[in-house]
Image (cartoon, rainbow, N blue to C red; front, side, top):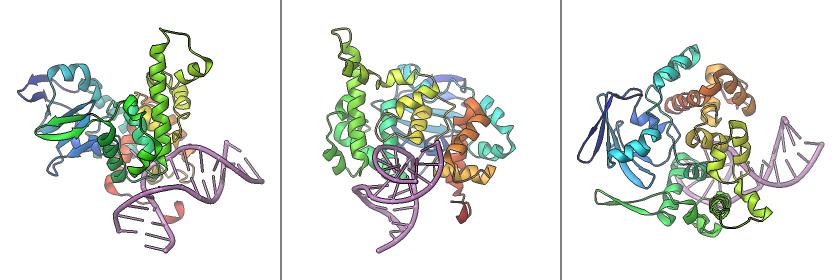
Length: 319
DNA sequence: CGCCAGGCGGCTA
DNA sequence: TAGCCGCATGGC
């Protein structure tokens, strides 16, 4: 447990003496798109999560979670912030690698959030060959059009839509939101996820056709429970999902901490720290997975954050 | 204007 | 299986 005790406040809760928790590092290490810094502060963020708006504020060693109740925390947000995990132990193990030591010290307050699989899947489909600000804007527009609105401190925010709501979107509507060619992938994926979850409920009422039984395997709860390798294969069946997107979904929403997504930043970090062959992404991935095992996902976050914040570069000919 | 961004799908050899 | 190309979009 990475905090000592919880205190109930009028507008939220406070966690006392929290370890390994830094808002900027958690929200800027590439795992999420719906958290925004408030007043340009490194320790104050506002997020839209699970149909709720909340603020996170770090004051010395205490973390304030505003906008949620004690029940919200106990039933959901403790797991969302991965607070039951001992990051000291993970960092200790990763620091044994002298090259990773610098990246771990730099991202000392990183935690891997346990996010919603559907939102994560759609978000990372949108991330392919795209820019982070544009990904955030796309997700905001999707939520604005298909999500439930939420009132918080006199402002209106929109939750990310449910599979059912997004499954009603047409490809053309999604294109109008500026999602580009990814619109078709998102449209098809949303429909598959919704159909699968819907058919899962139908089983009790009637016999399914062979085609319907086939669609059941797109159920995200089912996929989430699969072992890592099978989980990866299952996710890759969604249109717009390759190895990188599948690794992100597994790591950021399905608790598969051995996943190691290799994107342009991690690629740079691997060349910079380990001198690995820059052209071979699959080799980089297997190198890290063998080296770090079930901690590969954490190492990926420290490497990504270091590479992106430091804007590290690698020689031109190595691209 | 060309280039690129948290890749993927499809086609070729 | 590896290697290449096109792809929507927008900022530089």
